[in-house]
Image (cartoon, rainbow, N blue to C red; front, side):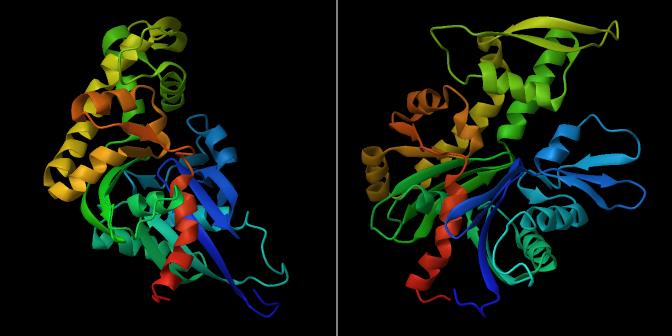
Length: 335
């Protein structure tokens, strides 16, 4: 890029749980999609990790917001401020100038026109000049090195924080796909509900996420893991600690994981037979932070009888593929 070029290319994986920004083929921002605002002025106090540390721990003058819910923008103003705050972390170009930004943004494959417009508007207000959108399963496929132009069927299951996208990709396009608003956040919510029903205990979202990460499983394991969980007893109103097992998390997550399984099977049933044969040979690839839940691969294999594997860097492959998308567009003469 020349000295007098004031356009900066950045790629954004705008996720419900995390936002990743790539510039010059490097991940320059990887932060939680959280913003803290002053209630009195609506000005930003903190963004990303700093704001997440405040989540569910603020006083009346500060509100912490996750602007995206179920993969879509729930709070337009907060999302715009969050994007601005995260983009400011990208130290690129000549700092005397504020370059126009050419942005490529990953979006869920089931996004409506209204939802896509909301993403575009937020990007434009955050100094975006040229804005391109790419569906997340395609970005994930590019990010993990699949030749998406080849006449071969590849199935990608991208389990993010707010949505699960399932797509069969061939010849540079999506042949069959489905998107459901069930993903990593729903794993956490399922654990919160389970703790309330079984133990009369109220736990926060962060505690539920810790349970999921440390002992959560979608499939029966030979070794049972345990974790001491602190929360508030709903009967006495007092804090208490209970011991929770990985078997219990499997029970808690069963309804949610079944919905994801049903979606995968539904897309497979609609896939043309030649491409279905390719998927049997090549397997199903899981991406996204939700793919890191233990036992998901085994659960999908048991139901579909198709080899299932998780991408090497499941949390970043959508962002990496989004970053490569400008080169992909240039190769197809679309920019």
